Image (cartoon, rainbow, N blue to C red; front, side, top):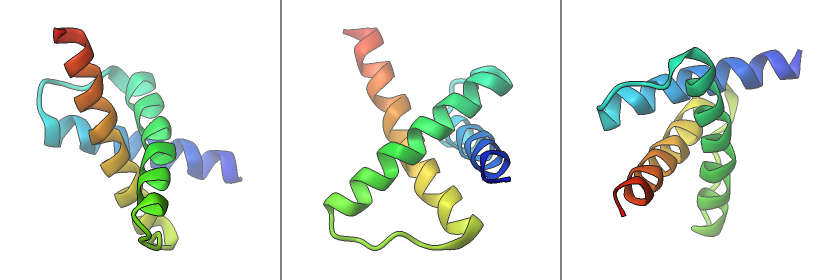
Length: 81
C-alpha cells in the first residue's frame, strides 16, 4: 500500500509543480517521476535546512511539490545552458 501512496503523492506533486512553474506538465508518468524525485529532493533540502518535515499526506505533498519545483527549475537551467 505504501507504493500506492508514493505514486499518488508523486503524481499530485508533479502536477502541482507543473502548474506553479508553468510551461506544461510532463504527462501522467512524467509528472509522477518528477514528483517522486521531488519528494527525495524536498526531503533532503528540508533536512539540510534543519526543518522538520510535515507529517501526513498533505505534508508529504507539500515537501514533494517544493522538491519538484526545484527539480524543474534545475532541468530548465540545464536545458537552456
